[in-house]
Length: 444
Image (cartoon, rainbow, N blue to C red; front, top):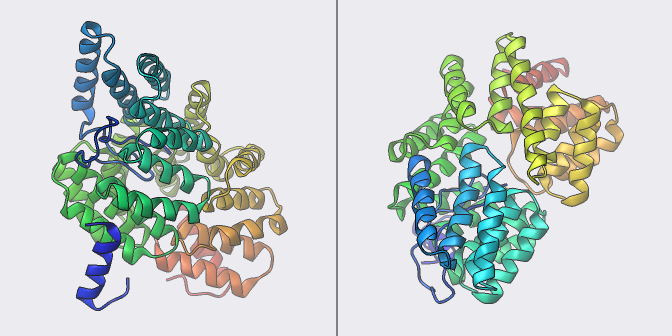
C-alpha cells in the first residue's frame, strides 16, 4: 500500500484528518523492479542493506576480497562505493568519500550508465552537501532505471536540501507510486513535517515501523519517531522510541544521541553527558559535539565546553579537505560559541547555494549576533514560514524581535518555542526563559 493510501485508510478509520549524508540499500540493478525495501534517511542516513558497525566493516572487507578475485564485477564496485559513504557517516570520517569516488568510478568504467553507480554518485554528492550535483546524478540514474530506490530517495533529499519543497513533495508522491516502502515512507514523512503536519509524519513513520523487519530498518525508523517526538517536546515518547531502536541495535548512534537529548531535556544531565560523550567519541559531528558542549556550559564547566566547541573547527577543516561543504553545520556553532564574523560568512555562503528553512534560520541568527537585526528579521520570519515545528527557529526569531523592540511579537515567539520543546537546548532554552521574563512573559 502506498503512503497516500495508508494515510487515507488511517484517517477514515479514525474519522480524522490527518522530517546531509544519504545512503540507501536496494534498487541496484537496472532490471530490478521489486527489490525489498531497505532503510534510507532524511537527515541522518540509515545503514546500507541493514549493515552497521562491525557488520558494515565486515561487508566492506568481503566486497574487497571479492573484487580482488573478480575485479570486473561492476555491481560489487558500485555497492562498495555506497558502503564507503555509509562508513564515512558512521565514523564521522569524510576521507572515505575519496574511496567511494574511486569505487564508483571503477564501476562506471566497467559499465557506463550503470544506475546503481550513478545513484552512488548522488549519495556521495549529497554527503558532501553538493545537493545540485546529487540531484543531477539522481536524475541520471532514474533515466536508466525509473524504479531505482536509492535514486528516487536521493532525489527527494536533494530537492528538500535545496529548499524546493513543492518539487520535493511531488517527487515523494512519484516515488511512493513507483517504489512504496520504508525509504519513501521516511521521506514522505519529513516533507510533511516541514509543512508543519506532524500528525501525518508520525502516522507514516508508524506505518513504516510496523512494516520493518530487519534490525537496521527498525533502528532507523524508531529513531526517526523518537527524534520527531523530541522536537515536539514529548520526551517520554522519545525515550520509548529510542529504546525500541536500541533494542534492535544497541550501537545505533542516532538513537543514542536522541536518547541523550531527551534525558537532558528531562533534567538527567549526568546521563545525557555520558551518552553524548559516547556518541562524540565515535562520531564527532557538529550536532552532538555542540550539544555536549552546551551541557558542560550549562553546568558552568566552561573549559570542557570550549574543548567541544573547538572540535567543530577541527571537523570543518577535515571536511573541507575532503570536498565536504560544512558551512551550514558550522554557521550556528560559530554564531553561538565561536567566531561571529565567520558565522556570517558561512551562513551567507550557504544561503547563496540553497535557500531552505535551515539556511534562513542560520543566516538570520548570524546577522543577529553581528548586530544586524533589521537584516536578520526577514530571514527569521522565512525560517518559520512553512509551519515547520522547530523550537530553535522560534527562539531565534523571538530574540531578533526583542532586539528590534517588537516586544509583543518577541513574547509570542519565545513562549511558543518553550511550549513546543522546553528543552530544545541547554543554553538556548535558558536564555529564552530569561528573555521572556524580561519582557514580562511567563517562563515557567
